[in-house]
Image 1 (tube, rainbow, N blue to C red):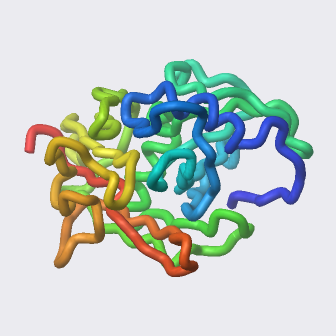
Image 2: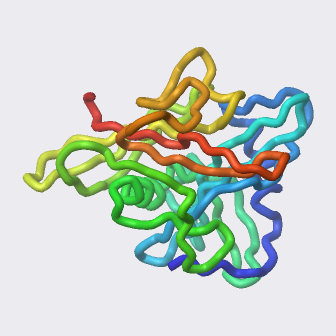
Image 3: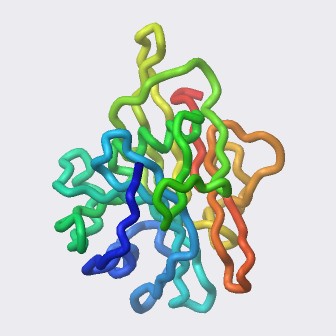
Length: 239
């Protein structure tokens, strides 16, 4: 169970992201640094209780039009060699001490728990409350036979988002994989060049009907209402 500490974080997550975000190929800003505010998201629990897992939705208002980003992150007490390429930065937590903050698409713990969420094996948790499920997060499983998840690797990270391949093993010992398509830009400013994740609408909004292997995230817009979009889709490798 994730415990949410009401304490200090120096630098803050948004301050770390302000430096890291403009370096990403899917960043849509131009001149100047981003002006970020958290507007939504959720958490997942690490079964071992060691890694913090957060899916943040943040809006950048530095440009002529706001842009909404989907930012999966993990927080660790020690450096993780498997996630080294995804290091966002380090920070000092008022209770937990020195923390390493990673882009979660590189972290095998986040990838395993994200797939577990889609498969109905774990629950999305509220972003700022301890032991409180978040009913706004909707998901559907990857179709096919049951499997277990091993390691993962980022295959592509470009203007269309981040694609991750997770190794899997089925009940008979066969190995295959699950492909994750992680949207980075949500809403009207989303996927460029007509590229869409499997089953998602071109703007990434919530699809009509059943779309297997997906996660839908909700966030607040400036007028106080909420909106949602497909943040992740998944399919079997080779399909």
